[in-house]
Length: 109
Length: 116
Image (cartoon, rainbow over all chains, first blue to last red; front, side, top):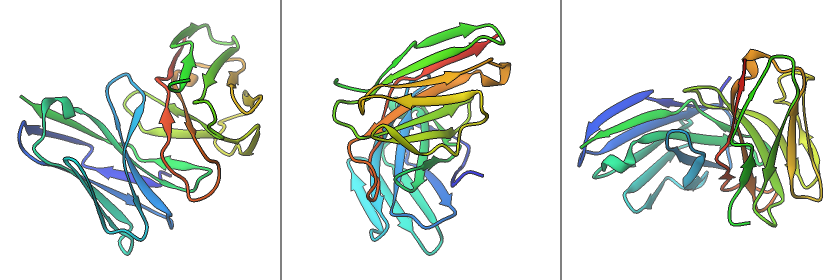
């Protein structure tokens, strides 16, 4: 079974709105990572949050981590059409980073 | 190299044929991973290399799948006697350091395999 599961599976918003995606995981983690994938491309790393961190910011991205609930959220503020992509959380060990099934974000111009 | 390079980018083959997919990781990256992604799905872990050794092969779906890595660099994923269910995008990723607490993976663009 997937270590990480994102919800919602699909999200459609207007340009300028904020987008929030959630991820749940099953086992203990050292860190949790978020990746982005444009259609037909490879994945690109967005942000990593360590297990002893609760919140992290990078530009328009904000990630939170709640280890007691084994969950994380990714917030994209002031979304742009170019943010349209699939977003995946990834967790696990150095040997096996397990990815969820992803959230497909569509930002309408 | 500047990034992770995979070849071929597209491969169409007939059922029963063998295929070989190649991955050139970023120079100096010790850890290398293979994943499989079916259409519209998440990533399925296949195998992890630490240098030339593969401590974790748990994700290989069957004995038709094998992978090797030579010189701590290039890796090949071989699928023997391909089946239609092998059709997917095969993604390779590398990471600078193996072991430890883990960290950012750098992905290639993938090899899209279609088995007719």
